[in-house]
Image (cartoon, rainbow, N blue to C red; front, side, top):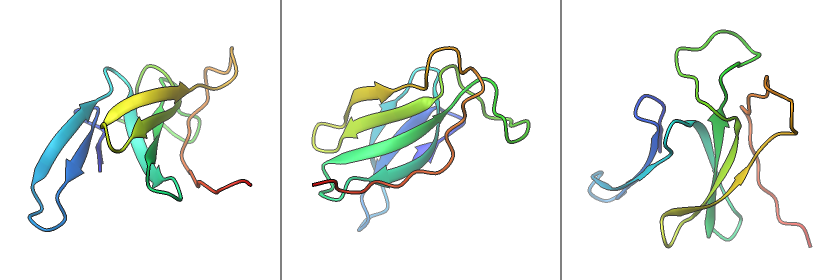
Length: 99
């Protein structure tokens, strides 16, 4: 689960519903989560400073997609939009396996 206000992802134990870990993003506002087909990675969209859809209360510094290693609970990569595309605002995400 992501929290736009505190700018982090929270890992929740489905049995107890307790937060067991928090993963900070440091100024980047997380929005939507999708899992890789093998459940090894979580892909989290990040809102930028200039959302094009409408004004939002929750905006971040850098739009993109954060890639988290589920086992280590660490961000392993940040996929950023093309240089100069300051209005990028990732909203939908789907992950599919390419062979």
